[in-house]
Image 1 (cartoon, rainbow, N blue to C red):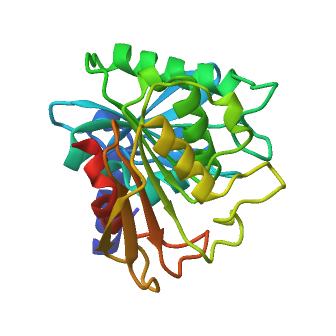
Image 2: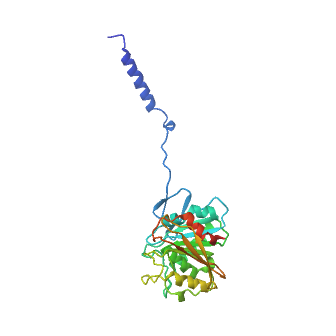
Image 3: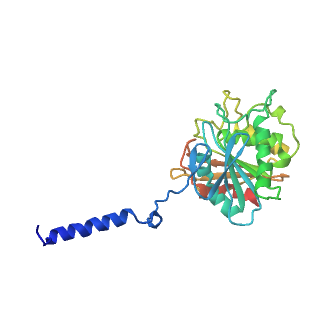
Length: 293
């Protein structure tokens, strides 16, 4: 038998001992891969600075600023639509941080109009009751004692803001309707309680025409504004203000502010803006931001 062991054999022996010692080491010393938890709300992943709560089987995304909260803003999406799109249009974080508001965006219904927004003989109140409950639930969950509540809606969400102004005006401080006006019959909106109104629309909007449309019983913006002029006790005179453009291709904004109103009524005509556009949320806020004062 050979009494000598070659150098290569010695190296292999050390390698084997090293490998065996690695296999038997405490697994707790090994690095563990971590996977960040993601939050799903209304079928999409939401940013980590947002919450997701559920009411009546509907998800609601919520942004709570790290500031004293003075009220609530509820965003209503279009149809078909989702909270994600309207959160982008109005920029929930920007709105919450600059105005000290809790910003909530509930999921609508999965039907063509997105919300039960028509004012007629049937006058379905399912969504009205749901959104009224959303206000109550947010106050409880986030310990909000203020009665300041705003609704901001885009397209079908804009339709719904007007129905809310008709049916629960006592719970609403003001509404902002972007490209979505009153639906149905004004006679079915008989409340005498005024609500601050700001309507934003473009004359080239072909999906929700500013002149209204028989399909869906969409009334014109002129009729819609006139109804709230009367309800809010405004005179027939208005001040005209030139404001910034809300998209890269827009030519600017002309805003009319009616005078002598018990609660303000304002209309902003955004020039050369199709219904579906990449809205500048900062410029939009500059236009309707007065409503928070």
